[in-house]
Amino acid sequence: MFTGLIEHIGGVLSVSGTAAGKRLRIDLGPLAAECKLGDSVAVDGVCLTVADMDGTAAEFDAVPETLQRTTLGLLRASARVNLELPIRHGKPFGGHFVLGHVDGVGQVDAIESAGREYLVHIAFGPVLEPLMVEKGSVAIDGISLTIARLRPGVLTVAIIPTTLAKTTMRLKKAGDKVNIECDILGKYVLKALAPWRTSAPVAPAEQADRSERPTTLSEDTLKAWGF
Image (cartoon, rainbow, N blue to C red; front, side, top):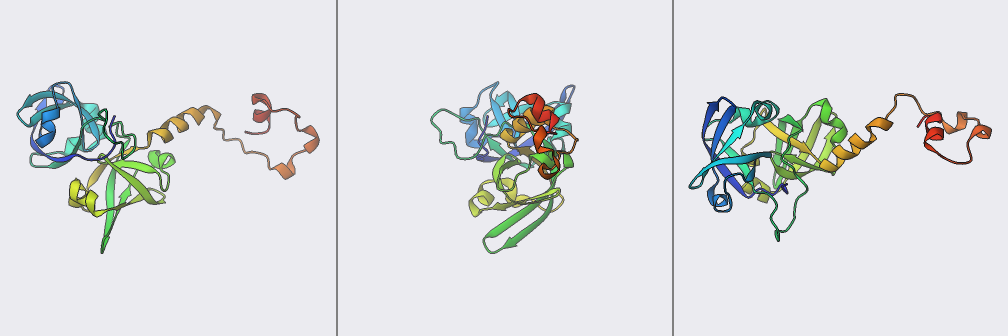
């Protein structure tokens, strides 16, 4: 589990094809001192496992499922990626719960820069719409951000200068693909409510016969009233 607070921008040293997908070799810089084989590292918001280490360089295997559902399949040598190690005991928790499980790939729609304000508009697919909440949390390429504005199919995040300086967000341009992970709380709430969702309309209170209303509420009576 991660926080969405990027610790280092790493450089992709090489990308090679394997029988299992692709092998990514990435320079972890100072983070390498805290890594060993089998450890997890968030790479542009994707949780990967260290498969090999050589100095500050770590190798990761990305299987077809990961390559298809994230932007990792687009990586090339010399690309820059956001890196974060998992939550460690005693370290302040300053972002939000980020699992490194990408929900979808979005696309930078536009970027506005006016003075110290830097707004990034990101288009996303309809499957993510129910999970987007204005002023809620979202991870973009592993960065914990707040949704400043929301309109159908497009979210806007306001990037502060510190985030620009410490992440790859400053390198983005219109048309670039980004990994999106929605807030885990919203995903579980939506899943839990799924069996209760119905297409049947709820009868307006003024149209209901008050004399037939039950004196006690139960699951059956709520269903009878269209809930």
